[in-house]
Length: 424
Image (cartoon, rainbow, N blue to C red; front, side, top):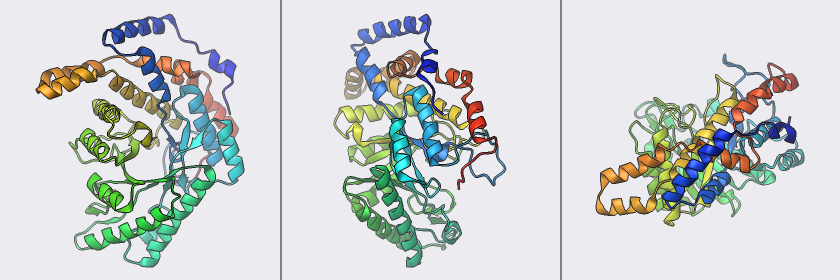
């Protein structure tokens, strides 16, 4: 389904929005910040939706089902199109293979074009596909058995081939390879086999593609993971070549990790490939972005904007994608909330007075520097985010529009109360 222009136009904003906007305009002018430039930057910041996030997960599991879930990749594109109509914040989809295999490439590409969507980086699932049981004990790209490694390599090459047909320009690789017991795996050999496998994949990629290597300190193994941290990810990326970079999954860091420092360090080396936006309370990465640590997300964007302005790494070279699990609520509602949370953190970071902050950093004025960051973080940027959305053709309040238009009910009528697509 698509929302009509008349339906979108019916959700106009109110005088309170414009009064709030005028106050912010005066404040930003006093801070020597360009109001319209900030609006343009918010408009331009687009975040990819993963195909895996548009349903409630595997049908065989006992979990909540919202009904009207997309049954194939084309219907997932339609759902992302709905999100884009409402929010004007997501113009791309990141596809997981083999979970979301295109049935007709031409039809899928034409549908994406009709919805003004493009295909972001592809995602291989070499540890989660049909050979999951084979990989369970000894891994995929780092398996001691060369034949199994070759199967995992072939899977990634297939994903690249599919991505080429769709118009993607990148591949994200994450492996569940690791071990649960001391002595189960040879650390050095497993890492070496992983590098060899990644090299084959890297050399198979088109020259205009990037490879993003994700790292996690655990999952599903509890003793060791082959790529457990940003250092290992960077080492492998450097050994592979200039088109390989590290991908930061916000929810998968050990407690008390300074993620904003990791981001700054990666930018310093021009090795930041992109983000999986999510959050965590304990260990999983399944919570909505900013739902637990909103200040951390603001500080991360502060480093990203500062690094880009200082020329450490081009903003355009970084990929942005949501990666969280929506198994208990309406996935489209959660995705709207996620897009809003990420955009607000970004907008707040745009308000940092960088000239004053640099002066404080040079002079060791820690309390003043903290106040500069706090002033930006505590600003209510919702009017800025709303105005950017309105100027781009979205609605003032996407969740209100989603619920008023009863979009989920209409999707249930179209697809059925028990519709789903198979996931891991």
